[in-house]
Amino acid sequence: MRAVVQRVTRARVTVDARVAGEIETGMLVMLGVGREDSSESALYLADKIANLRIFADDAGKMNRSLLDMGGSALVVSQFTLYGDTRGGRRPSYIQAAPPEDANRLYEEFVRCLRSLGIRVETGVFQARMKVELVNDGPVTILLDSEKTI
Image 1 (cartoon, helix red, strand yellow):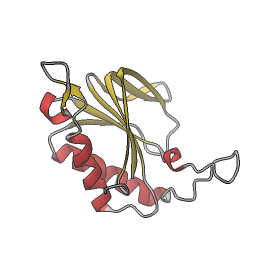
Image 2 (cartoon, helix red, strand yellow):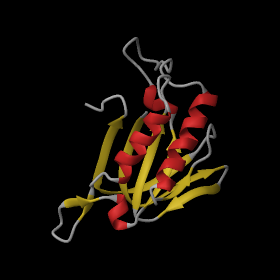
Image 3 (tube, helix red, strand yellow):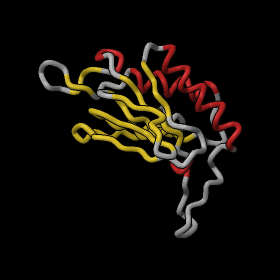
Protein backbone atom coordinates (compact mmCIF):
# COMPACT_ATOMS: atom_id res chain seq x y z
CA MET A 1 0.00 0.00 0.00
CA ARG A 2 1.08 3.51 -0.70
CA ALA A 3 -0.17 6.59 1.07
CA VAL A 4 0.29 10.30 0.67
CA VAL A 5 -0.41 11.76 4.10
CA GLN A 6 -1.02 15.47 4.47
CA ARG A 7 -1.43 17.33 7.75
CA VAL A 8 -4.52 19.48 7.31
CA THR A 9 -6.56 22.08 9.14
CA ARG A 10 -9.54 20.94 7.06
CA ALA A 11 -10.28 18.61 4.16
CA ARG A 12 -13.34 17.57 2.22
CA VAL A 13 -14.24 15.21 -0.59
CA THR A 14 -17.29 15.66 -2.79
CA VAL A 15 -18.95 13.35 -5.29
CA ASP A 16 -21.53 14.80 -7.71
CA ALA A 17 -21.49 18.09 -5.74
CA ARG A 18 -22.41 16.28 -2.47
CA VAL A 19 -20.02 16.09 0.48
CA ALA A 20 -18.99 12.46 1.01
CA GLY A 21 -16.52 13.11 3.84
CA GLU A 22 -15.19 16.11 5.71
CA ILE A 23 -12.79 16.70 8.61
CA GLU A 24 -11.26 19.53 10.54
CA THR A 25 -7.75 19.20 12.02
CA GLY A 26 -6.10 15.91 11.15
CA MET A 27 -4.80 14.03 8.13
CA LEU A 28 -5.85 13.60 4.54
CA VAL A 29 -4.75 10.12 3.49
CA MET A 30 -4.65 9.34 -0.23
CA LEU A 31 -4.42 5.54 -0.30
CA GLY A 32 -3.32 3.30 -3.16
CA VAL A 33 -3.56 -0.49 -3.01
CA GLY A 34 -1.08 -2.64 -4.92
CA ARG A 35 -1.37 -6.16 -6.34
CA GLU A 36 0.85 -7.64 -3.62
CA ASP A 37 -0.91 -5.97 -0.68
CA SER A 38 -2.61 -7.93 2.09
CA SER A 39 -4.42 -7.50 5.39
CA GLU A 40 -1.00 -7.16 7.02
CA SER A 41 -0.25 -4.20 4.72
CA ALA A 42 -3.48 -2.49 5.83
CA LEU A 43 -2.77 -3.04 9.52
CA TYR A 44 0.87 -1.92 9.22
CA LEU A 45 0.00 1.29 7.39
CA ALA A 46 -2.96 2.15 9.65
CA ASP A 47 -0.77 1.78 12.74
CA LYS A 48 2.04 3.81 11.13
CA ILE A 49 -0.34 6.63 10.18
CA ALA A 50 -2.18 6.74 13.52
CA ASN A 51 1.14 7.05 15.35
CA LEU A 52 3.01 9.25 12.85
CA ARG A 53 4.35 12.22 14.82
CA ILE A 54 3.71 15.16 12.51
CA PHE A 55 1.70 17.46 14.82
CA ALA A 56 3.25 20.14 16.98
CA ASP A 57 3.72 19.72 20.71
CA ASP A 58 3.73 22.63 23.17
CA ALA A 59 7.29 23.50 22.12
CA GLY A 60 6.33 23.64 18.44
CA LYS A 61 8.17 20.43 17.51
CA MET A 62 6.51 17.75 15.38
CA ASN A 63 6.18 15.34 18.27
CA ARG A 64 2.49 14.44 18.49
CA SER A 65 0.51 11.84 16.56
CA LEU A 66 -3.05 11.80 15.32
CA LEU A 67 -3.89 9.63 18.34
CA ASP A 68 -2.16 12.05 20.74
CA MET A 69 -4.11 15.05 19.50
CA GLY A 70 -7.46 13.38 18.87
CA GLY A 71 -7.55 14.39 15.22
CA SER A 72 -9.51 12.85 12.36
CA ALA A 73 -8.55 11.22 9.07
CA LEU A 74 -10.13 11.62 5.65
CA VAL A 75 -9.19 8.54 3.62
CA VAL A 76 -9.53 8.71 -0.16
CA SER A 77 -8.81 5.76 -2.45
CA GLN A 78 -6.34 6.69 -5.18
CA PHE A 79 -5.10 3.95 -7.51
CA THR A 80 -3.00 6.49 -9.41
CA LEU A 81 -0.38 6.24 -6.64
CA TYR A 82 0.66 3.09 -8.49
CA GLY A 83 1.13 4.92 -11.79
CA ASP A 84 4.43 3.98 -13.44
CA THR A 85 5.79 6.32 -16.12
CA ARG A 86 9.15 4.61 -16.69
CA GLY A 87 7.91 3.18 -19.99
CA GLY A 88 6.72 6.44 -21.50
CA ARG A 89 4.53 9.44 -20.88
CA ARG A 90 1.25 7.64 -20.22
CA PRO A 91 1.20 6.01 -16.76
CA SER A 92 0.77 2.26 -16.50
CA TYR A 93 -1.31 1.02 -13.57
CA ILE A 94 -0.41 -2.66 -13.86
CA GLN A 95 0.88 -2.73 -10.26
CA ALA A 96 -2.40 -1.38 -8.84
CA ALA A 97 -4.69 -4.01 -7.34
CA PRO A 98 -7.82 -4.99 -9.28
CA PRO A 99 -10.85 -2.98 -8.07
CA GLU A 100 -12.46 -5.79 -6.02
CA ASP A 101 -9.22 -6.47 -4.12
CA ALA A 102 -8.43 -2.78 -3.77
CA ASN A 103 -11.87 -1.99 -2.33
CA ARG A 104 -11.64 -4.84 0.18
CA LEU A 105 -8.23 -3.69 1.44
CA TYR A 106 -9.23 -0.01 1.38
CA GLU A 107 -12.19 -0.85 3.62
CA GLU A 108 -9.94 -2.97 5.83
CA PHE A 109 -7.48 -0.08 6.19
CA VAL A 110 -10.37 2.21 7.25
CA ARG A 111 -11.55 -0.40 9.81
CA CYS A 112 -8.01 -0.70 11.18
CA LEU A 113 -7.74 3.08 11.66
CA ARG A 114 -11.13 3.18 13.39
CA SER A 115 -10.17 0.27 15.66
CA LEU A 116 -7.19 2.35 16.82
CA GLY A 117 -9.56 5.10 17.94
CA ILE A 118 -9.31 7.45 14.95
CA ARG A 119 -12.46 9.17 13.66
CA VAL A 120 -12.43 8.41 9.94
CA GLU A 121 -14.33 9.92 7.04
CA THR A 122 -14.00 8.54 3.52
CA GLY A 123 -14.43 9.25 -0.13
CA VAL A 124 -16.41 6.94 -2.42
CA PHE A 125 -14.47 4.06 -3.92
CA GLN A 126 -14.15 4.28 -7.74
CA ALA A 127 -16.12 7.54 -7.90
CA ARG A 128 -14.89 10.68 -9.58
CA MET A 129 -14.13 12.86 -6.57
CA LYS A 130 -13.13 16.42 -5.87
CA VAL A 131 -10.77 16.76 -2.92
CA GLU A 132 -10.25 20.08 -1.15
CA LEU A 133 -7.73 20.62 1.61
CA VAL A 134 -5.77 23.17 3.56
CA ASN A 135 -2.34 21.60 4.04
CA ASP A 136 -0.95 22.78 7.36
CA GLY A 137 2.77 23.48 7.18
CA PRO A 138 2.80 22.28 4.47
CA VAL A 139 3.47 18.78 5.76
CA THR A 140 3.27 15.91 3.28
CA ILE A 141 4.66 12.42 3.94
CA LEU A 142 4.94 9.50 1.51
CA LEU A 143 4.52 6.01 3.00
CA ASP A 144 4.83 2.59 1.40
CA SER A 145 4.08 -0.66 3.24
CA GLU A 146 6.69 -2.43 1.09
CA LYS A 147 9.41 -0.18 2.53
CA THR A 148 9.31 -1.45 6.10
CA ILE A 149 13.07 -1.77 6.58
